[in-house]
Image (cartoon, rainbow, N blue to C red; front, side, top):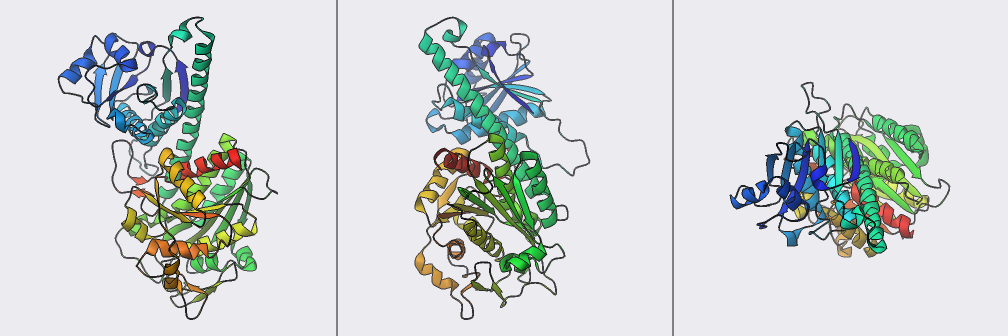
Length: 515
């Protein structure tokens, strides 16, 4: 889709559909919506008076312009209560309007920047949210459907209404503010476009069937991404993993005909110490191994590589944005299957770090992959490490499907991820790494067990990972509850969500600004 910013009067836009907004409880529309209402002879105000539209979040009304405007249709979308407006509500409204327009066979869509006027949001952030919401809302997991697909929107235009200063010479200061606003709007739209495209690609990866996306297939995609974006890339196969002592990655993958891989991508100065290392769990299918999972939802276990997908796509977005930092991205990849060669409960693995791990359940496999990758990131001298994984059902039980869990050894890093996630649309909630809970990982035959039982399962998984980071500042994002949606909503299709891409890009941008 082509995304552009146009500076013109809102009632002069020629398009298939023009999107304006309405706050809940407003009786007479103002601003850009008011200008469109005036051109339509008060049609929007009459809908409000008749109770046909109330401005509730994601509520939609359609009007045909009938020649009163260059736009053929006007879509009015609700933003909810003005005092409750936030960036994610802008994303929702934009996605709702875009899907509605597509279903009405529109090909070109123009929209005002929701929230950048009376809503009081910064124009750049509001523009970013509008573009993100539109592109995320239009994604459909239909790659393998043979029936006719929904025809895509071809263009999104963000309308920046001309101000009085923009129509004439005006005060020099006002013109400067207008130019700065327009610059911020364009920058935000570009950020939103790149971040949303990366998120949709992560969704597509996680939606891939396991017979289509194996560890080797994922590694091949990473190589293509590296070539496309000028990234450094290395892929360790089984022989290199054995020679290097990656016992965790090899252990998880030993039961499958699909052999494991470790993918490393580098952005920035490839010889320099990484300012940030991102690590993503990449289990391309998780049967549970010998500790076999129950049948329920087993068909979604192809998405157990959502963490690795988020890292791969975030790095591509970081490269497209040209962020100036030295970045290491690690994606340990394996398929967890039961067989005569599979890892067994009671086995002991020697990890890359040198520590030994007793296996109590083969369904706690993701942390074994991450442990080797975390140790590798530390060996590469990473200044800070963030891992992301569909790690524990316990986190889903604790926080539901709307929040990721975040924990770590560096409270400042944890706090930043919470703040960045709230703004980026990838919300996370902090969980404590309770020191006493480490006793649940005590083993009689090895340095530690790979699982600590049902109690505080998300936290004991975090405590396990911390054992492989030593003194390096580290944080862990558990996205088991947020990586997949079982129900479609007006602004997004069901399936993989791409959760984590935008929070990681936002973190990289912040690190690039301060190192």
